[in-house]
Amino acid sequence: MSEHDGTVLGESYPHKISAEFDSQVAAERGAESLESLGIPLAQIRIVQPNDPDMAKKVEPETQGVARSLIKAHVRFGVIGLVVGLAIAGLLVTVGPALTRSSPVMTFIAVSFLFAVLALLLAGAVALRPDHDVLIEKARMAKNEGRWTVVAHCDSLEQQKLAQTAMDDTTQTL
Image (tube, rainbow, N blue to C red; front, top):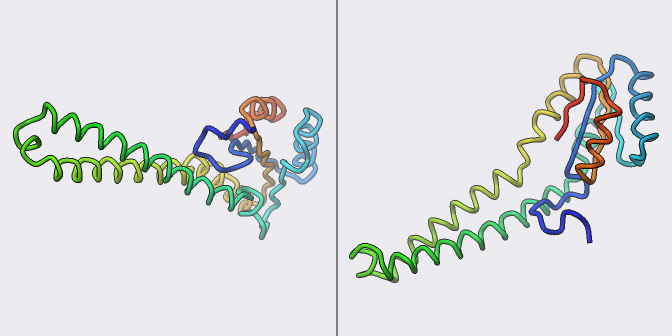
């Protein structure tokens, strides 16, 4: 059972850290320092200047992102619906006369509202806007002729370990 079974994330490596380097040698040294700290080489990617595979190296888990979208929408949608039903029940029981006089419409309207709001929140969470900064920095470095080392970490502890291996150009997620 992995650390992420209770979360809405469907990615194997939800934490990322990156650092930019001016040369291939420096980038390879950065990757080696990550590996020497125990981060498997399979979790480390080096993005070269003008790299055509940059997207796969920075965000390799497209199926994980899809799983995150599905898990988040199902879980948040169900939670929103349950909360909406509970609030509608409360309104029908002790609410204003309008909600008590039309309980079916109250249940429909309130549960629909909360389910939709929860689904909107699920979309915001599952699209991982926190990755945008790392992706944009890697894209800019690639276009400027710099090298980027990206470590895909499976835990916060591994991310902190990777951060100790990198210098102050590090971008963590």
